[in-house]
Length: 316
Image 1 (cartoon, rainbow, N blue to C red):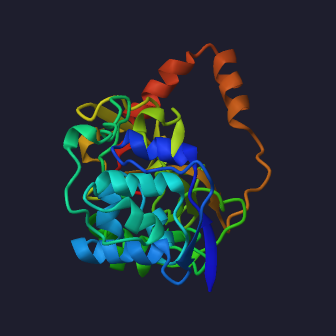
Image 2 (cartoon, one colour):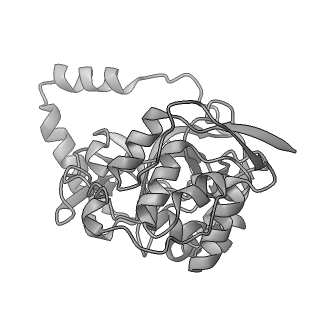
């Protein structure tokens, strides 16, 4: 099948020129016949094979946080124009005419001078994370799945969370209200977050790309090389060299200090699944605090005594 491709896009030409790629643009629209079978995704696959790259490694080279975009492209989804620009920027020796239109050879005879290339913007100083790449799975339509990390898999997750084979073996689901964005589910073990969450509940979380932007007092799943922990974080993370305090909702569990540099993944809890249906409370927590204050006790002093009686805990 043949299609007409019109090459006279001023905006595209200007953008490519900014990264050192010059296109000769005609004053008229010129119909060019191309073989539809030779798609851009086919040529991207050829490019990765040439450099010995896969979806994960090229994701790192392009500076993306997740590999879902590359998985979709390699599955046949046409890349967007900004993605093509990123690829040409990361591989300056690749011919734009070959990548976009299938003309000529993959590699240009001469590599464009480095000074002519648009420098890839450095990671903003305001972004705080460990710089890792998130491995995801997608369905047949290229849409991200919600992977479940059950209790039995959490020990392995700490060591293999960035390995495609391990993540592909996790149970995968599609959940209502969790279709837009990247979500992952974790099974709760233990009583550190009772009475808010119970053992065997499942929390559904969204990935936190920039730890500086976490919401204080929300619950987070914190992944380190040693544990997967469900805790409440009360302050923002502003520095990789800092220390963060992880809090439990169970008053018998003491706050747990952790070096930020030890965090590998951070997930914000956005909802949960539970088979436990609480009954109507006889006395609410707010009413208890009102009674404590009415008896003349200081609320902060009572909290201090509760913390002193707590025991250390670092489990999910």
